[in-house]
Image (cartoon, rainbow, N blue to C red; front, side, top):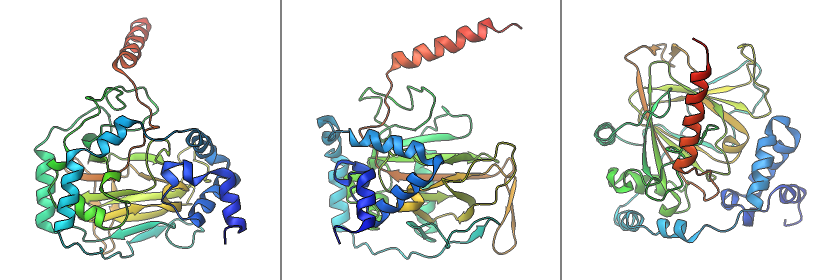
Length: 336
């Protein structure tokens, strides 16, 4: 019903027609996110970002031109030529925290255990290891296919470039020809042009990533992650949960085991109302009782497929030079 209370509540927070990240979300999902943001002091960032989206205009012509770039045209041809089937979505192995009161997995989370074969796994890994891993972050190495971007609170010109040439990473068609069509065929993304970035991350040892929600000013409504090499546990906790400042475990979480060759999808509440991260634990236990040691020989690689929005933050080289100059000056001022 167009006059239902849930739809009215959602409309007060976000006009889906003007928000790129919300265009493909059903109204019940928008309402759930809207209500979570109203009740939850920890979601004020979401509200602020939504307000920014309301003022955003349509994508610039340059963005539209990039979407019509040759790799996407080629991708459409390959997708049409391939006979692709709906993936077999299954329930992942999970562990619930003692204080978790959710009804199972967060809404919008989907999991496919054997999304690619062992031979395809090796093919994807060979493409990544044949390229150059970037070490702009202390915690992990990265590669970008399509547009270059990584959201961070720090001013980082290499990861948030404004120059068109600097925004171009490795070409999307450097990935195995079958990979993007298979991801698009899941129905997670509207079409091939929606995936304008594939971000590869390499985690060594006990390296992880802090709990976060992908910024809605930067990324679209759907995230899909392919896991390679070794398994890991992804921890999701409600955005309303206050973070522990003394290192104690609040217990309000659900852990999802990401196995090699699996595909994880985050949409709806799992995308907008839950933080996700990888804890820096040295060990974790698999369902069969085997203990995984995240020592010096441990390695996990992931590929995240997503849409970068024109409202993302972009920095030019001069801004990065100013930051580096300021940091160097402060270092000289510190007494030794």
